[in-house]
Image (cartoon, rainbow, N blue to C red):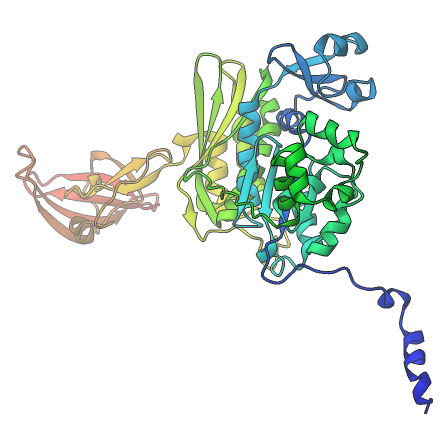
Length: 506
């Protein structure tokens, strides 16, 4: 037995080196924790969604007053183009670049779509178009997603899968999360002390301050945020106004900042606009897949599914609407994309397409299409539940019809054919009393004279119809087989004694 004085030293020596390092302080219990998603290249990412991004130099230009560069792709930045550069200077250093107009309304639409997607990670999401960024309160989601780092990685992977490049910052206040999202390799402090240590070495240029305030701080020798945090708030307010001390208090959480909650629309719509017109249906598959992925994540956040989708092809002077309907609801992008690829393969565009707009149908609660325990059969056979949808997508809506009850007293008129794009009418019963008495055939045909069967199997008698413009009927319905063995559905007119064929059972 080792001496008592050495027992602690022996035990410490047996521990691995990493276990002796003080753990990083975790979130403070009961306090919110904010995650900021900064999208510095949202204008370029929006172009990537359409599949029209060019490999050469590309710049997005703002037309407010004097044209300036809003952003440029990697080839343009490598040539020396930076945001804010006058367009004339950018054109002087680039060789035949692609110039795209900056459209803030389109970027705001992308931002709101991503906010709908991120609702699957938090119920408090706030998009900020001026960033452009999205803020999420993740303190209540940490346990569900097994910690801060795992949650941040899932958010980044989701946005990357949708084609958006994002930077993430995490802090106990929204203002600090915004600031840290703009710093590469920044720490992710979850409490006040760690936040102060993370902010102190950052330069003053990281703060969203007016130019004159920043110049005044530099004039007195201040260079780092930590130096600014040590100064009294009252003196800072006297010298530089109240904006600076309020910002510092919001960074540390001394002054609360209330952010509104994003409410997605009841009926979501997903849209992509092209910077150049598309003339072939095959070129629509890539942007359509992007729309379906956005829809999948947005509906997953609501725990909803759809059974019907409508796709608008926007031309210059008209709109072409396509529709698909499945036998069961779901939101998985790959399942819907298979059907749309079939539909697009037989489509000839009536005019060049300028934009795509995807309309989910009625959102059905509690419907998910997660994979089962065995994802596919051993034979690799397709799922039978989408068979009719695939046939309809390939052959058209008129190729697959459904029978809908009409409640007509005559059995041969008790059902009507309906296409998928015609919603079924409400009916109190699927089978009429006349059908119970006289039956119904699988394949219907107009009544046509036929020979009397040798051994009919009687089904029942139908009398009535005198109220329908004199269409009074008295019939005995029966089943019989013809020479080819087919099962016939026919009746005998009691007034004339003649037999009429109405349909076949096989």
